[in-house]
Image 1: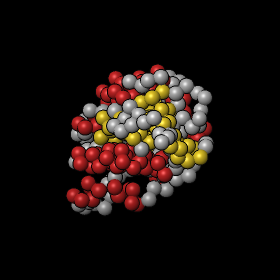
Image 2 (image 1 turned 120 degrees about the vertical axis):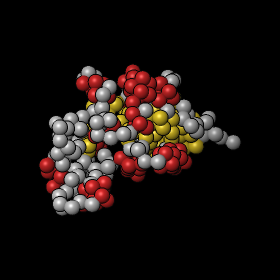
Image 3 (image 1 turned 90 degrees about the vertical axis):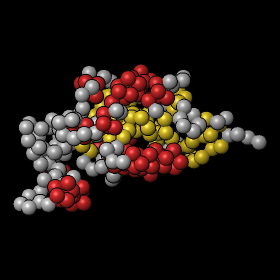
Image 4 (image 1 turned 180 degrees about the vertical axis):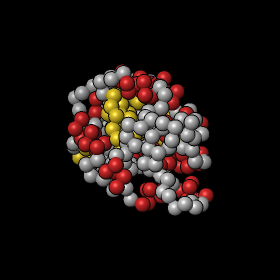
Length: 264
């Protein structure tokens, strides 16, 4: 009995062969093998991207919030995942909130409420909206506004981007998901570079990370979640659910060391 199973049609085809998921789509470009919590996967680095979501001061800086699980993602990213991605020839993309005045005008109330619910739950006696775009004071800028301090990459990650390395990029988003509609900046970025395989990291795993990952899954991208490079400030069970669902349904799960141990 053959152990080779073909799923889909070229140019978007997977092959399960001898216990390895081949995601190369018959490309002649150099490929590598990466271990996951299930079977290994074979990918083309130049057609892959490490997507690091919302690792910004607003979500991670102790000056604004306590997020120890999010901060714990920074060391494995800097020591293993990012160096491995860069050395292999993968793209590294910092996908971040970067609002403009125009995007604020188009922001739906459902999303505005989610960023002001703490104020609303505590009782907003003066009737003033204090959510996205609101000045956070002390030089921190408007909440998640492009170019502000609070929307800047967190320490260490910022330095990676500022080195100006080839294939290390920054893409703005204005929703939880960077792929929420047709023709978002992130979708155009992926299309222009022919990227098919996405490794996800960042915060929060139960919101922006999973939102982008699920939309990527629906659009036909290969999705791999880095479990030790993603986290949530919510109860751990919410992160665990995302990891489990990704492993069972959306794609694969690995960690930073797996990415660092890629085999040619």
